[in-house]
Length: 368
Figure 1 (tube, rainbow, N blue to C red):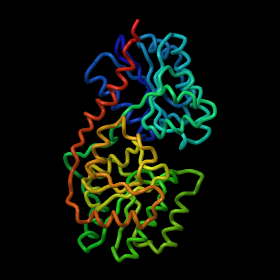
Figure 2 (cartoon, one colour):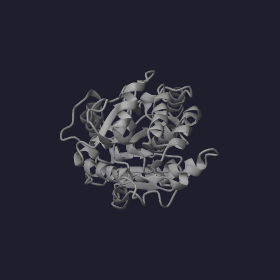
Figure 3 (cartoon, helix red, strand yellow):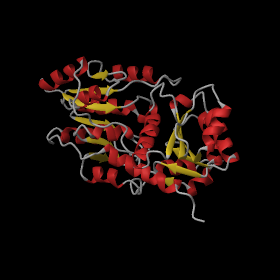
């Protein structure tokens, strides 16, 4: 419940359980807004299977606008809450601002529930031109894409001052000492990130005698598609049983970056190409090692995001043409071994101020 007597904006937050990158983004965006305007922005936590009408009504009365990010993992069973809050906000004459982080990759039932929220929104922010294209293709709410604004998304992780050791880190360091090439991939493992294609890269490197050790720093998303079984079957089929490690969930940034430091290069094969919403790429690039990734599908993908564009122009992110095979990615990974470690100048607070400024401009009362 918000503690301030009055606020420019009321931000809907999830419980944070289970952890969620978009939920973290919501909190950090709110913190950034509060840095410049300490008493102007309030928080309201939406819990699954719980709707507090009187408390919600009072909270909306103390704000000029309500702000929500979607999709938040904790709201999978709580989407009635945000929809009800948007409806009440309309009855109270409050503006409704939605920040939509993805669309086509969402389950169809998730899109079904989100469509009414988008229709009730006075302002929609999208985090990528690719998401704008996906929304525009929707037969029911596609027209909303024409008036949507773009918001530059910051990295969801920052390189910590110190790193933590772990058993896996020691394993990777030892592998490097005996000449193995450590190929990394960070983030949740699910079909949309094409983990099987990364296995093909490792197989190509092995065929060339590069002795790769591929480490997936993350865990499988539990879903009905059987991705983990498919993944394990392909590992066996490619003869990579001794060459692939899946870390599982890593809780702290210190342990994550301890693992990142051991990697020679990261690789991502993305069917839609690199987009401005790929937080895993922004996290990986902070290790100072090249990130080899599929080129974006849209020429204007980063026009709204000059800080991301700087990373691309500076070579921290290495693009591979769309449609290229595993060999092209392997070529870039091998070339990365001779590159010195270079930590990019990436201040997450500055990046979040960019996002907060974009939102703040829309929170200003309309000119009369």
